[in-house]
Image (cartoon, rainbow, N blue to C red):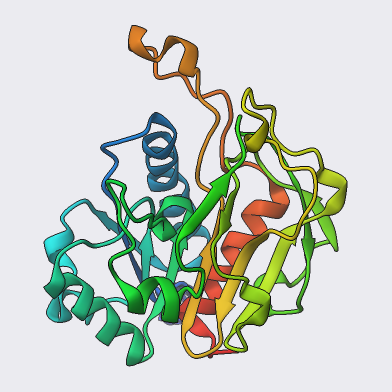
Length: 279
């Protein structure tokens, strides 16, 4: 009788501990990533990497990660299930999708956009035709220029924020095509620039065009609009074997992940967007 009682107690304790462990691993928030992955080998490469890396981080840091290339899902009903939205490579183009996203953000949703998600240039295939998004929300306005070829840059923290927690003052980022913008974000009181390109990075880029090599200037890389729970990250363009792209090699020469500091930045960002408050 005593053995049966003891065995029952052991089983109860084991079951209790298992339930506690399961409860401690309960998913704390849900992330949905939108992507297109149809143009530019580097953007496609980044999307494929992201959709491998983020699920791995979701398991480790206890959140759910879903992804979709169906931008029709960018509607109020679908978004209601998620606390964080990612734009991995592009932006929504339809009026209803844009309205749903703006409403989601104005109600306190979280968002992180990468690289080309902020691109908008008049008289191009992707015109700056969404004033709220480019000028009010991102603050950057039109695309200005870029470096070429994709190269690493030394980044400097310009503001303390949960996103930059435990990062060194400067660190070397993964190779990327770096963007500049029409608007000077330093003049926008709503924008908090978290990281910029450090002057020790110059000259940045290899050309061959001289305007693709930056020799000086201030270039924000990661920033936050204080009126929203959002973050823009300029990274998201791998270096590719462009010389043989028509041979269908599509070979990536670099990765946007695997850098401990850049990875930490993205993890900090997700946890802040999913669980934190507007800063």
